[in-house]
Structures are given as C-alpha cells and as structure tokens.
Image (cartoon, rainbow, N blue to C red; front, top):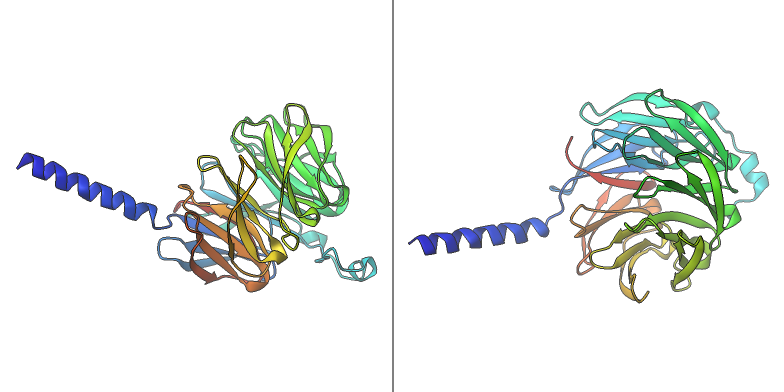
Length: 342
C-alpha cells in the first residue's frame, strides 16, 4: 500500500508540474502609446483585468526590483517615424509638460508621482538596488540618470543621435544606450556616471539584451536586418545574426538555457528565434502588425509580444511557436513587462 501511495502521489506531482509548465503565469503590463494607458493582463485567465491612465505616449516600461511598482516613460513630443519629413515633424505641437517617468503603485493601481526624466524619455532601465534609473532622451541626444529616492535628475550625459534602447549589465557596472541616428552604442560606467565608449553597430540600433556573463551583448539593428553581437571585454563586434530582408529587428529576449534569442521583427510582423551557438533560424510565427516590445515569462515557456497597429498582444508558446491567444489591449501597444500579482 505505501508503494502504491508514493507512486500515485508522484504521479499527481508530475501531472501538476506538466500542467503548470503548459499554462502562462503572472501579470503582463502593456504600455499603449496612442491611448495613454497601461493594460493589465492576467496571464492565468488570458484576459485584460484592468487599465491605468498614465499620460501621453507611454512607451518604455519596467518593474521595480521588488515588483511592487511600475515605471512608465511618458512623452509630450509628437510621433515622428523615420519616414516622416522633418518639416512635417517640426510642424506638430509638442507638450514638454507631459514628459516624465510615471511611478505606479501596483497594489493601488494608481500613479504615486511623475518623476522628471529629461526631454522626450523613451526607454530606461533600473539598477537592482532600485536607486538609479537610466533613461534615453531621444530628441536631445542625452541619457538622464535619475535618483529614484529623491525623484530628480542626478546627471545628464551626451550620448549619440536619437538614443533609444537602455540596458544595465547583470553585474551593474555598465549601462548601454543604443543611438539610432549614429549606428552606435554608448557605454556608461555606472560608478563614475561617465560615457566611457561609443561602439559602432548596425544601422538604426534599437534594443539591447545582455548575456548573463556580462560581456556578451546583443543589439537589434532595424535597418540592417541583423543583430550585432558585442564582446565588451574587447569592445568589438564579434559576430552578427543576419535576418531575412523584410524582417526589421526590434525587441529582444534571451533564453540562455535553451540557447535561444527571440527577436520581434517590426513591420516583418513576426517573432523569430535563433540559436545563439550557430546563429541559425529555429522558429518563426506571425504575431501581428509591427511587434515591438517582447517579454518572456519566468519559466521561459511563453513569450508576449506587443503588436502596435494590431492593438493587441500575442501569447506565444516558445516550445512549438504556436499562438495561445491574441488579446486586445489599448491603441498601439508598445512595451511589455511580466511580473507576479502585487
């Protein structure tokens, strides 16, 4: 009898574990650029459960290290895509009073404060101790360093033209910023808050993804249809992953255990995965119009893509690349992060 009990108990645990791995868990937070909101999506029920009005053009989005707060970059600058003539862009009305970083208490689902984040903040990252926030100021070619305790700008650094992606290294020594107009990446020393290098990459670099070894970095190059691989120990590009023409790399996500790099391809309408060892294409799925932000669940079994003009997100099974569900959110979803229930 005891043997039978242990066998049945083990079987129940195994079935439970398998079921757990086949169901998305957690909460997805999605910034909707054109509706000025953040959608809250319960990944257990695969439904939008709430929406928070945050301000103009929410794009970059991050959770605090403890998962209790959400930060969202807001901008009063007009939308000026690369193909828009400068004259048309300059004729649009800007509202600098709308610029800032919204800090949201997730238990209350309300904005606590709007922190000054410099002009036209787009993307940002937060140090693991929750003390500093590094943000790209797209329209002035700067990166602002924010003191989150004081809620003020500590320093502004000159980087390259149209800075966008921001990522802090796992060891917290460096902050990297992609410069779209300069085809470069600026490297900031966090201890000194100085730019210590500018590294050439591909045309119109967008997002940044660090390998856990701290030195290896992946940079998506939208107009080169490629992902640069940088070795920061030598400060040189080592290799690159070449995508098909028509695939415009945007958001990146990495699963080191399975050796997979996931890439959102913008107007290519797909999310693709590549083997980081041999740089070969593994899988691809059409997820929606212009997927930008992507995020992996904690177990890496599911990926969420924010599909701009589709006004939805896609839940993708990373094992078989099958779409679990498409969920309508706000207008022009831009960024996505995944956390647990507050």
